[in-house]
Length: 367
Ligand SMILES: NC(=O)C1=CN([C@@H]2O[C@H](COP(=O)(O)OP(=O)(O)OC[C@H]3O[C@@H](n4cnc5c(N)ncnc54)[C@H](O)[C@@H]3O)[C@@H](O)[C@H]2O)C=CC1
Ligand SMILES: O=C(O)C(=O)Cc1ccc(O)cc1
Picture (cartoon, rainbow, N blue to C red):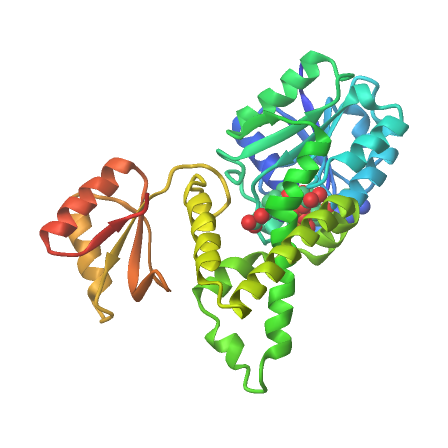
C-alpha cells in the first residue's frame, strides 16, 4: 500500500505528536488536518508539519490514503461518520482513542470493517493540545493495533510500518481485551487520581496546608489528575462496563485493607504491601512520557548547600561526561533529598558513578 497523503481529524497532543513524527521521518508526505482549534492548525502550518489545513472535514480529505482520528473518543466516532462520506474508497481509517470496542462496533454498523484499524499509542501525558505535541512522544512506546479480520493484510502491514517508522512498538491485540486491560492500567488510575485530589481539596483547611505540604507520593500518583477533563469524561462513558467492574474490585480491596488495619491484622497488611512491591518492582522502567526507552539515571546524596550541584557538574564535565538532565528530588526514598542525574548513555552513567565514588559521594542506581 503506497501512502502519500495522511489526514488528521484532531491535531492536539497525540495527533500533533504523530503528525510531527511522520514529518520528521517522511519529509515527502502530504500531511493535512482539521481541528476546530484554529491556533493548532496555524502553528502546524508555520512549523512545517502540515501541508494543508482545512476548516471542515470535507472534500479536502478525499486525497488521503490514511486518516488518523485524534479527537476525544466519542468525537472520533462522529468524525468517522462524516469522513466516510468524503474519503476515497481506498482510504484506511485509524484512530488513537483510549477505548477500542465502541468505535469497532460503530465501524461494523457503518460497514467500514475492512477499512478501519483501531489504534492506541500507550504513551502520552497529562498535557493537552498541539502546543505540547512532540515528535518523540511515541518513541519506544507500545502502539496497540486492533484490526478486525476483515482488514486486508497489506493495510495492517502499512499501519504497523507507520507505527514502527515513528519508533513506536506495534502490538496487535483484540479490542475487548484492550479495553479491559486499559481499564485496569490506565482508566482506573485516572479515576483514583481525580478522586484523591478532590478528597484532599475537600479536607483542606482555610490556609490550604494540605496543598502546601503535599509531597512526592501524592504528586506522583496525582499528576494525571491534570489531564483533560473532556477527554476523560468521554473515556469513562465509552469504557463504562470495564471501568465499573475494575472500580468495584478496587473499592473492595480498599475495604479489605481498611478492615485489616481496623483489626490490627499486621501479617495480612505486610503480605498485601509486599506482594504489591514485588509486582511494582518488576514493571519495566519507562521515561516520563511512559515509553520504554532505557533510563540512564543515578542518584547522589548531597548536602543541601549552594554549590553542591555545581561541584558535581564540574566533576562530570571535566571527565567528559555529558548530562541529559539534573535536579534535586525530595521524596520518602531519599529523606534528605538527592540529586537525580540522567545521562544519554549507560556508559556515561557508569563512568559518572566511578568518578563520583572516587570523590566519596554516595551514589545509587535503580534496578
Ligand atoms: N493524552 C494522552 O496521553 C493520550 C490520549 N489518547 C487519546 O488520543 C485522543 C486525543 O487525545 P489528546 O491528543 O491527548 O487530546 P488533546 O485535547 O490534546 O487533543 C484533542 C484535539 O481534538 C480537537 N477536537 C475537538 N473537537 C474536534 C472535532 N469535532 N473534530 C476534530 N478535532 C476535534 C481538539 O481541538 C484538540 O486539538 C483521545 O481519543 C485520547 O483518548 C491516547 C493515548 C494517550
Ligand atoms: O500521562 C500519563 O501517565 C498517561 O497515562 C497518559 C495516557 C493517557 C491516556 C492513554 O490512553 C494513554 C496514556
